[in-house]
Image (tube, rainbow, N blue to C red):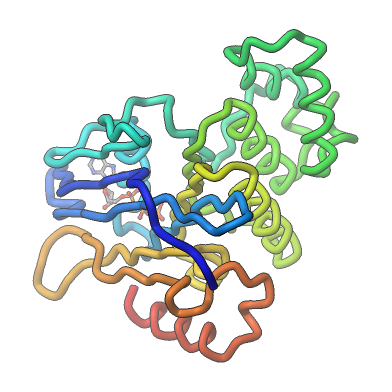
Length: 263
Ligand SMILES: Nc1ncnc2c1ncn2[C@@H]1O[C@H](COP(=O)(O)OP(=O)(O)OP(=O)(O)O)[C@@H](O)[C@H]1O
């Protein structure tokens, strides 16, 4: 498989976070632009860890929503410190305005796009079709299923034009069929633009690995306080990336079992 790793898109340097105790300890990882000839190949990264390990805190730090005790997150080709708002966030509870329809929620996401109302309507209609939301545009979020609310929330982030989108536990609360659909959708988003970078935070080892090109395990090392990156998995090098039928491969299932054991 021909590919190269080029410019740095996110550099997470020495992040630690202390509340009354150390939650994160010296977390370091880098995301590079993956380039494949003839394709718009975005990046899909997962941070895998068990419940309570500190994933949500790391998520907030990566999005610039909280400041770590130590360390820094740099993003973009110019590698500037992350600022809240630059990284799209799809939170676990899908934050939507309940008193606005789905379409109004989507229009709000485009308020800084500079497009006319008509253009916005056309763009929303096109994406709604792809996201299977056309029949729901006039509904209020309360009337949608969890899977539909999640798709609205993901689409909002796509419409803001953010190249970085963080997703907190995107597979939880969805049945197997919906998980396959969201994986398909996320892969589609990652290939819409060369620089699109999805960061998935999850305890679901199999689904997180199935969609990713790179995965980082967030765990505690023996006798050490705080969680850190204990393992980096380059699924491209392992020949386990970019394959929708990856779950059928024995090597993939072996990797899943290995990582489950480590978190
Ligand atoms: N504001 C806070 N003050 C003190 N401790 C906190 C605060 N927020 C989170 N914590 C602690 O930080 C640790 C990590 O929490 P975090 O929510 O990041 O875990 P998580 O891995 O996302 O878990 P889950 O998957 O269950 O949501 C927990 O022990 C939690 O109690």
